[in-house]
Image (cartoon, rainbow, N blue to C red; front, side, top):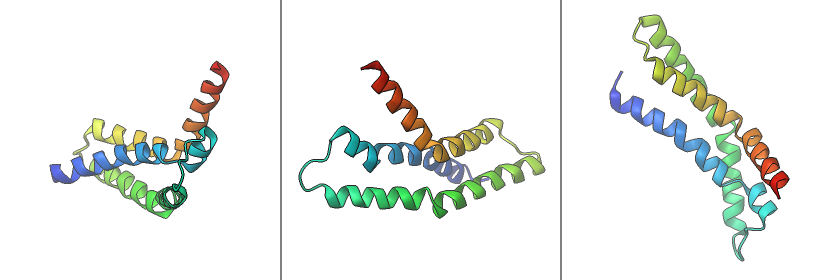
Length: 110
């Protein structure tokens, strides 16, 4: 495999959940962090989150898991990369549960 492609895929899998967690419109509304005139920006982030957690994220996750499976079949499996892909998929699709858990913990502390 091309190392450049592997590093780009790995960085994309880690950057995507972070951007989704930081751009959640529900979290911004709960905290009250919407400055004046930010309505279109919040709506755009909501659209982006819905798109990335929908068909796009599912397709990327399927391709990444298939790539790990193919690497296992050919005997060229890098276990760290495989674990990164699996953990990235769990974080990506479990981001809303992770955020709600953090929010409930933060609210219980106050």
